Image 1: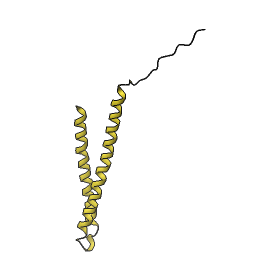
Image 2: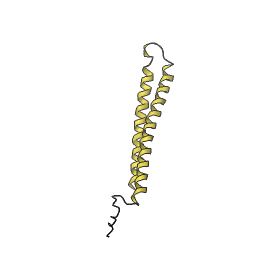
Image 3: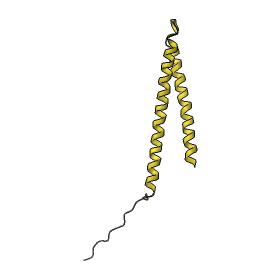
Image 4: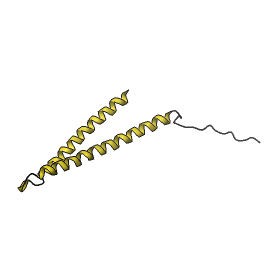
Length: 94
């Protein structure tokens, strides 16, 4: 009796592509994590600096300086993220 022939395993990805894809995925995950941490740290630092600055004031401006500190922290975090992404894009171009 004839035995059915085994069909070769079909794969769209070659074995040599897997390590490169894994590195790309890990690099992307690291970049996303760094972006989140960067913005969070800058925002919290802005909050604490604004609170410290607010402790010197009195009257109706209480809390305004804290808000300004948070906004400055967010802006600094966003600028830092832009530089981080530019650096990663330059490194990936080769």
